[in-house]
Length: 162
Length: 173
Image (cartoon, rainbow over all chains, first blue to last red):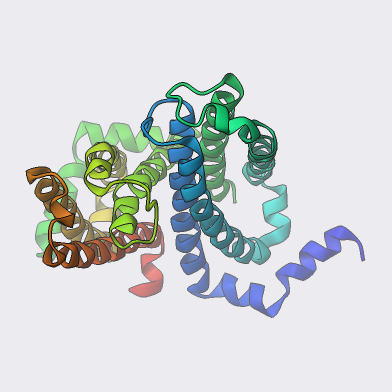
């Protein structure tokens, strides 16, 4: 089965048609926005701590440990609702420049998170309580902030191009 | 009431500011999504502050953070976020007063937003009275949990309602 066929098949799923034609779409969309603000709200706290702009009295590992689970949980809701929205017009969204940019930014945000957790955070014991953390950690915070602002902007822009 | 709203909408629509914003939003590409994104990013600030304070009170998040310190540190983000929300939100209302002031979902949203703000002000003011105000007695802890639950529900409903403004016709055909 060709891939372009797959996207059109997605749109023809009974679930996709149901979402697209009923109040399910605005419901999923509003839950998507709620989840997205919670994802970024939790990550924002981590980013600002890394940048030394907020919550400096708390250990980095504590902030990460207590807030990352919230951002992951909210991210699962955002992806689930996002997929529900996506299948209503899979072909159209894939052609949508804002949607493409959003996917790329999400991928970059994921890479940034992976590098931070697998490399940077390994040495956290040495700077856990420092108000000013090492440069790689600061850069991870700055990159995360910029990438998630970009994800939100691109996400909001998707609807303007449909 | 409806004619009063119509009069207000007409008065706003007749101003030069309304016309200028309307023209800008309609002709300069990108302005509308950028203003909307600032609006959503301000919601993010509220999530990171007042919503996490509520979750902390309910014992659901950030257990290592101390409540009164958390309120002192985070509530300025809530007030700043609210100011930006008001500014960006009213941009659209001023540009299209007829569309928004007659929108029943906006009315519902505002009528949940006001008690949510009142609760947040009351909660942080009481907290500022003495150290560990909300942890000083079991009665206060109970009251804090009730306030936090109501606040949490209101903020979530406000955010959901915000997105539904565009779909008011689904609900009120």
